Image (cartoon, rainbow, N blue to C red; front, side):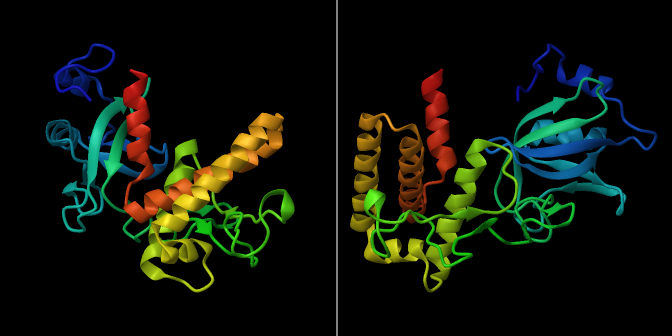
Length: 257
């Protein structure tokens, strides 16, 4: 987000003058996680809220129920760091691309959009991933059954829609972090964490070797499976060290320039 010029050449004041506010002086604002593409919330803003957002780079809105301005996270601490502001083609809707510092929904869920038609997809405060829904391990586990061609591949199941590839990484990272905190019995992730970094690194080495062999054999399906196993165990390492995958993605973006 540039302080003086928008992407298509409009200055801030020109852009604010061009926004098509409704009869109450409000415009809908969609808030989207810039790293994952996940839609976090929908709120409304008046001109002052937009001005405050552009000035402070934090998410400001206008509460229709309370009839006043509000800063997201002022009470909860779950702020929205606004990296870019966009408007749609008709200038009657606004998009905040943000880095959230906590859950966006007042229920404690990461996103307000956790319901799907026909049922709940990912309830408030949950991770969106069921690590062991049917007695299956999250990933191919050398300690709890066979590995590779010698044993049955273990599976993990994902629940709920993922709006961008990296949001799967973020969801799995949050699962690892929650397993580290809560230590549920029977968790494959917990078993790795309890054995320490050397065991996690050993698994990464094993999965990397299996990926190399699959690639050498030219087996497309096995390459996909082994890459998934490798990425998963790398995410366990990131979770153990407290390194969000978004930081790795940011490094890749920097290298692309």
